[in-house]
Amino acid sequence: MTSSDRDETAGPVGSGAAAGPSPAAVATAAPAADTVVVPADEDPVAAAGSEVIGGPPGRRALLGVSWWIPARFLALAVIVVSVLGMVQKLPCYEQAWFQPGSPQYIHACYSDIPHLYSGRGFAAGLHPYVDRIPGSSGDLQYLEYPVLTGLFMQVAAWLTSGGGDQQSQEQWFWAINAGMLMACAVIAVVALSRTHRRRPWDAVLFALSPVLLLNGTVNWDLLAVALAAVAMAWWARSRPGWAGVFIGLATAAKLYPVLLIGPLLVLCWRAGKWREFRLVLAGAVGSWLLVDLPVMLANWQGWSTFYVFSKHRGEDYGSVWLILMQTRGVGLADLDVYIGVLMVLGCAAIAWLGLSAPRRPRFAQLAFLVVALFVLVNKVYSPQYALWLLPLAALARPRWRDILIWQACEVLYTLGIWSHLGFVTGPKQHGIGEAWYHFAIGLHLIGTLYLVTLVVRDVLHPDRDPVRWDGSDDPSGGVLDRAPDVFVLGTARRLREEETYAAYAPAGPEQWLGEPELLEPAEKP
Image (tube, rainbow, N blue to C red; front, top):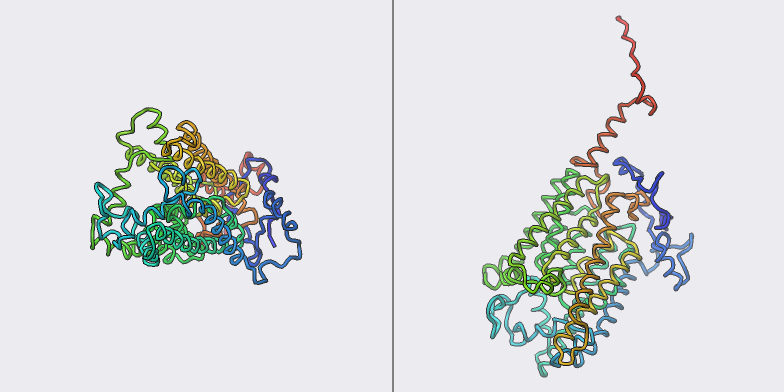
């Protein structure tokens, strides 16, 4: 059972709303390792939802002792949600993907996968990064995806039947990719359940996500999501070398996982864990080079297409920059400079937060913040990018109410972009126009900022962090969990100095203002 009976309505622990634990709180007794936190015991929304299946488990319930351990239940839940997502794509699978105009957007079942089977040369038997795409020009002469994603696509193409017409081949290509991506989602949810060892059920926030259902097969992002989740699980088990290997592999599939190195740098700096950070960095660089270096040597232009295409890309769908461009009527000439400056300033602010917070932030919290920063300032935001944040959000802020508010905004954005594309691509203009699409982008930005605000609040006021209510420190922190601080700044340094002074202060607080007592001189022998 759970060792925490608190819920969100209880408010902060302490004498007042602003009360927070001192750095010494890290030294509080750890909860028993064999207890499992049940969300229905401390989350009002989860408790209300559990009434559908008979209410929260009782005091004598034996959890995790049957065949239905959390990992198996979560894997089954992901499979069910993934199958429902495939069913949601049926109107496109049967017709809409292969019809001109806007049907695939009107049915909100668009996917890049079937279109790129022929569009990137897989149907013709070409190999990514080596063979030039027929009829291509400019920055898109080769596949514009990172190398490991290209290999994933190539494996699916090898498994696709070469018989039948082009439509049936594209259908097979999508179906095979959907099955492989479902396996990635299962790996991700099992890894999440083993990251917070006492909180495996927080992974339900990933397993039952509407974003996973709607966007799981829009593109190949779940490959990187799964690898990043495995990396965090290895780090939680104090295996920094393996964590680095999987960060490198995830970066070889999608660029965003490299951002996980930043929070680890800050937290290892604060805790003095430089050996572990070097292991992570070496593992990440080594595995990334193992995947990318052969392609670099085989064809530099093919390998660099992803990076060149990303650099030359302008304001695109889903970004705040698109709103500015369409409102002003002209794009920003130095867009990359603006984004770079915002990323540097944002990362500096997150680093300061990590080094100056009254208690060292959890790894998942800083990881969520830095990826959310990248999502917010990036020049494009596709609906499936919410999958990047989904496992991090489940670990950083495991509260159903907050996750559902954020996901509601993401679902509305997903429906909004498909509706807008239906409006601009179809002759009958079914869907929403530019103004309403800007509103949908605003919902996505507001939802993400809402979750960012809550995570920052939890960092500044650790007593509001639900993961720490039961005395835990950083269950996903691995070597950082309950490690003493070595280097701190700002508020953390001030609190540490106050505790140091207090250790040498008079016994009673009232004696701080009184005259110091004179010590009797020692008698001479």
